[in-house]
Length: 75
Image 1 (tube, rainbow, N blue to C red):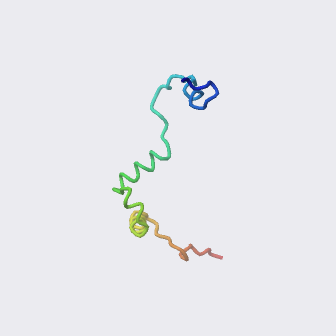
Image 2: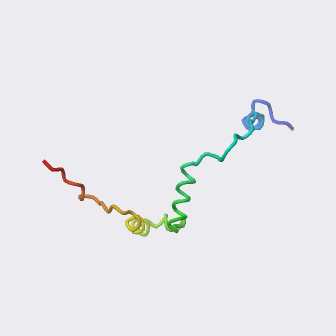
Image 3: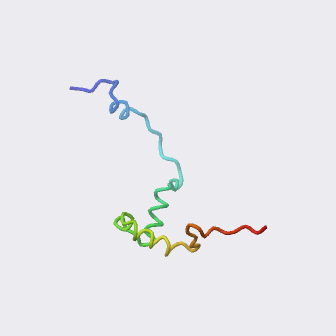
C-alpha cells in the first residue's frame, strides 16, 4: 500500500535538493563546542558531574571572577 501524497514523509522525500556549494562547509556552534571539549580533554561523563564540571571550568578560565568579586568602580 502506498502512502498518500499528503503524508509528511512523502512530502519530505519529494523535496528537490540542490547541489552542495563549493568550498568547505560552514562552522556550526556545536562543532566548535565539541572541538573545545576535545581540546580540554573533557568527556560526556565529566559534563554530567556538576562538581567536576565546576572544578574543571575554574581551572580552564583565566579570569576567576566569582559572585561578589565584581570590579568596583572608581568615583
